[in-house]
Length: 201
Image 1 (spheres, helix red, strand yellow):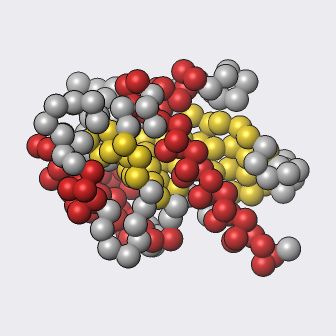
Image 2 (image 1 turned 180 degrees about the vertical axis):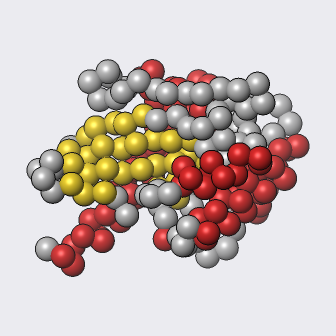
């Protein structure tokens, strides 16, 4: 659940961008960081390695007055895509309020998408979090490339069953659907927060 600091009148909502290596997680945060005014965001921290674009996480707090009387701060993280950083993935998921799963639309990356989604659910379960209880959006990225899977095919792999998530077809490098995805998951997080705190009023 989001962290609520009554003394400082601040709410902290953590959104994690998950997905396979090089699917566009870091590209999303880079684009958001470029477009949001300096007054509302801090410097984007990115640690790159030879084997993966993101070793640990990217961190981008965005301040917004979503809930009257409180300053709402959204912290955006990405997880490393490569499998051998799984302990870091699980660490970044701790305290998560919402998740954007960034899938690679290329047809030869569908198995990697499926494996990463299964890994995400497994890590959430290890943390005692049910996937269905977390605000969740899917972003099918790289829709401008050749040899991509259809949305229907990707839905069959990633978005079937009872708990269907909102889907955004994106080109993160050009900013297509980047903010649409972020806005959707942010709104879901706020709705869940209001629902969770209402009985305490």
